[in-house]
Amino acid sequence: MLLSLNDVSFSYRTKYQTVNAVKNVSCEFEAGRLYAVVGKSGSGKTTLLSLMAGLARPDGGAISVDGKDLLSLDPDAYRRDTVSIIYQNFNLFPLLTVLENVMYPLGLNKTPKQEALKIAVEVIKKVGLDESYCKRLPSMLSGGEQQRVAIARALATGAQTILADEPTGNLDSENTENIIGLLTSLAHGENRCVIVVTHDQNVADAADTVYRMDSGRLTEEAREI
Image (cartoon, rainbow, N blue to C red):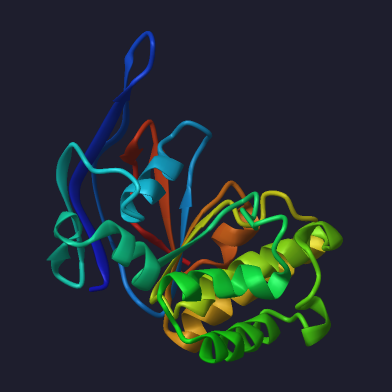
């Protein structure tokens, strides 16, 4: 087992009320599979992703990574080495080139520059972009190309688990199909654990396992596709 949640709950305060965003959630995620977490806006999907990424601490229950309590791990090292996050709005640095964006997490890991350069070029090619893209700025790319760069950056560290928040939300149908194919190949071809929070039925249809959230709860067991 790579990542598991046991009776996890999380709440937060707004100006007017306490929101119970995640309620007693238990689920499991393994390497080599593509997972989709689906549900309406406000159902708790993104909060669940934040908990798995170590960006928020559960109020109750436990999240374990390869048998170790997530809270016992260094959060920065966890997000550098174990999980990588892909955002809907790409979160690329606008003043850095494609190559520099992909190399950025390797710099945080203190990877030697020449090695980082080699890795970055390899993963840029892996997501279907040739070397001519390396010197371009994000503003020179289409939405689909920017998402590919964001995925390349997530792959650069070699993280076993990929967490994606609506990765096809800003893309047209052709680019959506390409990104789904890429995420599927990462799970099945590279034995990574790929977890996608999504409204996109196409992503859910491609997933090996679908979890459905409703008002902070998993309302049904994992559905095998």
